[in-house]
Image (cartoon, rainbow, N blue to C red; front, side):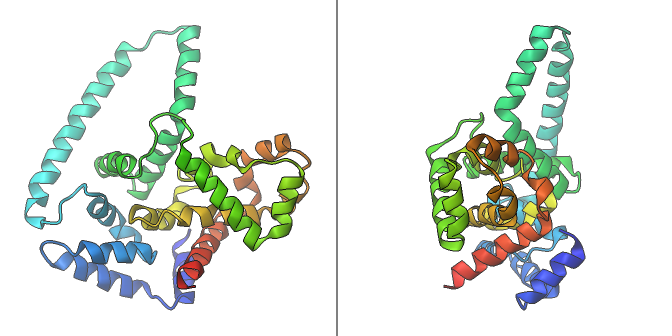
Length: 276
């Protein structure tokens, strides 16, 4: 989402970026930091990009509320990251054995954890390439959000698909009826959409505001992101004739929608639901 687009969207909510900056400055001005206020700001989806890494580290628990320990903690995290980087480099060199069987095994390994790669890539981009911050945010994100370490579909993912189906029935019964008529089971979206927190579907700039809410506990915003994607691709979906075509379409859905508009619509739908 571009800066101008974000600014225009926030203006429609009656919120100015300067207000968010003032609220964040106030939350970080006290010691210990005002964590409840940070969580409230995250759920208002109003975080300027320059503040996001620090806000996420605070809400996820990477840094403690007491600021007096931040300096030492930052040095410790940097040293641990560098140790891990060196160890990973050594392991990578030892594993360089060209073999077709090894290559196939590597592909299979990647398929099982590609949702983790996609989340990590998004966080790295959101952190503007600051790899130390990105690593620690990713590590705590995976733990706090209970991200599966392999591409296993959990009961939570299935329940999210069920909830998404109910939302679709409410917001667009005709599209919901069409999917039922052609035999589509929305559980097919669980792996790409919910296990990756949509990182396998949408670019980082569309997810940063969504994830602001998610890390602060508002998981239900992901349902509205899924709903927004389905509504944005309604015409294309209505032309599909069977589950196989739907599954194939899901792999390229981002090519048929305005991803910035999808993100903004999801936030709008979520905000309206919270006010009802």
